Length: 274
Image (tube, rainbow, N blue to C red; front, side):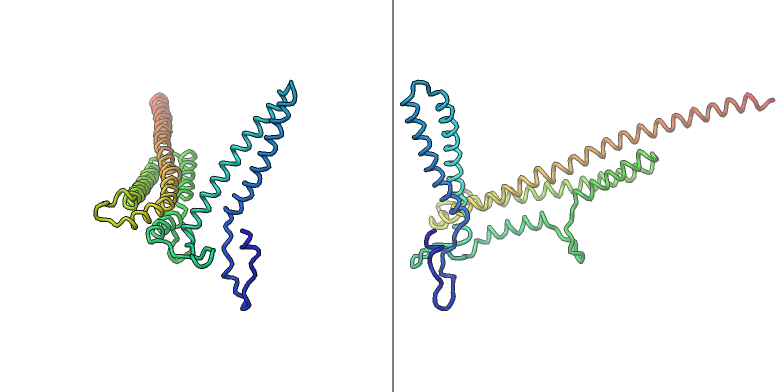
C-alpha cells in the first residue's frame, strides 16, 4: 500500500506501473490498526481490574471492548476475503513487478453475468426502456380491482381470467429461469468433472473461480426466488381473492335485482285489476 501511493510515474508520464490499490485492502489495513488500539484498551482495563478490588464497572467495559474486538476481527476477515476475490477476478500477479494488472475473466463468469443482465434488465425493443413486469401487473391488478368494486359485472371475469393466465405464464417463465440457474450451477461445480479424465491444474483453477461464480449465481437465484417468483404468486393470490369477491358482489346484486323484480310483479298483479 505504501508503494501504491509513494511510487512516482515514469518520465513519459505513464502511471500504469503503479500498483492498483484495492479498496477492501485499505479497509482491512484500517481495521487492523483499529484492532491494535482496541487491544491496548483491553490490556489497560485488565490492569485496572487487577489493581482495584471492586472492578465491576471495568468488567462491564471490558465485555464491551471484547465484543468490539470480535466484531473488528470479523470485519478484517471479510475485507481480506473481498480483496482476495477482487485480485482473482480483476487481475493476476506479475513476478517481475509487484502489482496487479487487468486480466480477462473466464467465459463461465461472463455467461452468468450475461444471464443476470438479460433476466434483470430486459429492454423493450425500439424504446430503450426497461421492462418492469411486476410493477406493470401490480398496476393492472389494482386497476381491475378498483373497476370491479365500482362496477361489478360479469364481463369483469374475462379481464380477471386474462390476468390470471398472464401471471401464470410469467410464473412459469420464472420457474424456467430458476431451473436454468440451478443447472448452470451444477455444470460449473468442480465435482461435476471426472477427476480421472480432467487435468488437476484445470480442477484447481475451476475450484478457485467457482467460489466467485457461485456468489453471482446464488444472488440471482435469491432474486428470482424472493422477488420475482414470490411477487407473481402474491399477485395470483390477489386475483383469486378478487374473483371470489367479484362473484359474491354479483350474487348480491342479482339477488337484490330479483327481489325488486318480484316486488314489482306482485304490485303490478295486485293493482292491475283496479
